[in-house]
Amino acid sequence: MKRNPFGPAATLLVLGWSLLAARPDPLSEQTRQDYKGFDSSLVRVEEAKRLVAQGLVFFQDQELDHARALFEKALTLDKSCIEARYRLGCLEREAGRFHLAVDHLEQVYTVTPARDSLCFLLAESYLKLGECETAGVWLDRQNKRDNSIPAAAALKRKISDCKKRNSVDHGRKK
Image 1 (cartoon, rainbow, N blue to C red):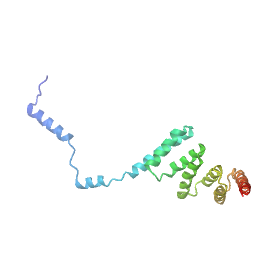
Image 2: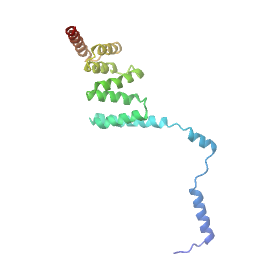
Image 3: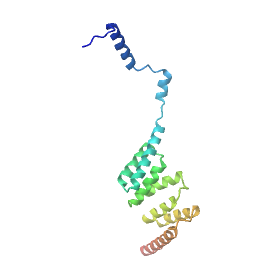
Image 4: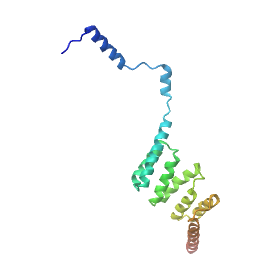
């Protein structure tokens, strides 16, 4: 082993200095208060946005289970993440779980009612649930907002047929 050319005092000085350097500086009282009051909501919001973006990639690649997991995690982090809720509504619609789709899409409507074709998606979903009157209400809202959706006329006929079937069915029950 090589001997230190500066002597044992220099070795002790270097050792003590390295120990002091590794020890964290004591925090000031203001810094402690800042850390205690730290609100991580901004971090959660940004992470939720990142998860939604990642989920959209899986959604486009038809890996719906992965997309659903990411959208749900985004909602866990940020309950007000409208994009995650909207995408979950679309996913549930695709999967044929219209009651879940309606829950998500109606929550989106309460925050952003002017979202493109949202009312149309709700009208289709309610029609699939057999709730013709409610489907008609949502389609009317869509038509007031934007009546340029090509499938709206076909959906209107389906809703009309559904209402006729329901009135005939109710007539038989009496």
